[in-house]
Image (cartoon, rainbow, N blue to C red):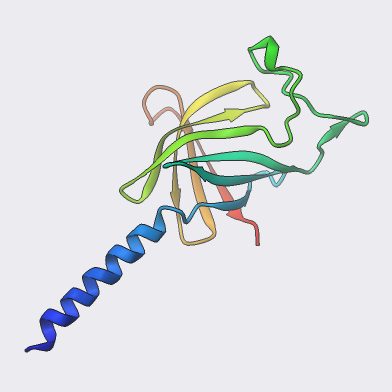
Length: 143
């Protein structure tokens, strides 16, 4: 019976340790669902961001593809490669919420949440307004 409090304390300590580590579990490179690009997710301060780190076809006519569909004319000449497309995610209750995802194919930015399904599958949900109106994609971890 004396071992029970020790085992309980050990279990709680391990649980807190695992919880603290899990919020950084999305850090790394992920292949998008179409296989056309890799997004590198990283942490700045307490928030998570992602940039387009690799593209299957980064060039068009020998020149880097640009953010041509951006509604801000001043941003249309920036290259897509290394463009930050995931912004301002916070970790909360096992998921990354309150962020945005930018779609360079349409030039639109959507609200977004992300959840991990195992270590190597990331569900990304972009939406407009309420989270019922949107689209989900599955990213796979690059090894």
